[in-house]
Length: 523
Picture 1 (tube, helix red, strand yellow):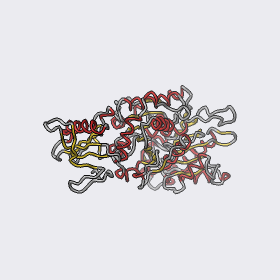
Picture 2: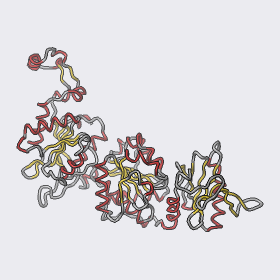
Picture 3: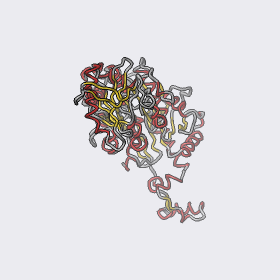
Picture 4: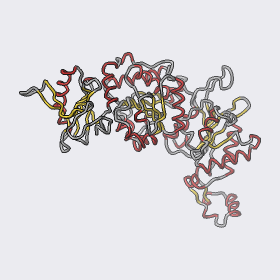
């Protein structure tokens, strides 16, 4: 296990400069005043970095803690450097950095030499909590600075996990970057891992780090990252990290930031957080009342009581986000399904002309959602947006249509091009995950790509979360939503402030939601 963490371990009973086996230790209890530590992990200068007490596999490794502590006392007297204490039975490991005032905790492997050297460096170089503060140039709003302060204070209390709940559009990424800046400057962290859901969000985070901390070397995580000591910020998606996390030693990162930390993180990616022994911060926009109990548990917070909370209503009242107006445009067909038994005589007559067995037409609303694609209804949805959506100057403002499926999205794009051929196919486009051009289409929608005409994005999950386009003023719910978490993430696409959107001195004041499936009534 020591060799797996990169230590040079001799064969059999042989020792090396890195790992001394059965190491003699002075100043011990007993007639000879000498003991023998199972393993002493050495620094390049010969001083002890760690001491390991190994019990047989049938015994609890913590039974060796007192013995290991006495070895650490002796080594400290001899070398004037207190080693970090490890206890193991070959399966379970515990670390005790008692010189830093930390309690023992279970870990999933040994620290590498580099990681252990950094732990010793931190003992001397770590600045007091009063000197670890948010940089107002990165996150200058009061609630953002308060969030950083609360997380730092929690870590100073020897707690290793924290959770920030912050409404979409209030700068969660800025808070995270400000925390990174504060912890690196305070020598609380050297290497930081930023985890997010998708490559587009990773790209967005990379751009934000580049804007606010350009001097910090950063990289995307790949198979060669485990030995990378040059970079400070590592960015990855959860799925990519799942494939390679065990190639790193458990102490490689000092801080892991988990973007959009809700249920999927606990269910699918929890192993990543269990494996690494470091500070961990969860970020989410999900309202506190709807966060799963597991999320609070994962970040060691009392249920309903995150480390920091800043909700949408407060953000709107303090003018950090814009409010929305909802227009409900549903039909009986969308609300209740389509049923011969509930039709008027005139409707039945029309159906009888088109259907061989009209009495068999009994679709529930849920079935309508899954199997019925009514072109006329979708034409009305598109026309409603074009006629009633918020305009910027003479043209429609940036708009997102949330479609039910890829098939539905492509049908809506086709219908738009039939209804409004004058736009030449560039004004309204589908952005879905199976399209290899998805990332460049998102750039177009943000106004950063080659097609600056792209104004209406039809999304299937791609734009529901995380993507920041402050110019968005119209959202169209062209599908039913059953998850309250997702519902608020979708609303969050329009909440951001956008100064001078309508001209000098004319900022974005609100955004419009067109709800065609009664989602607001449902929630």
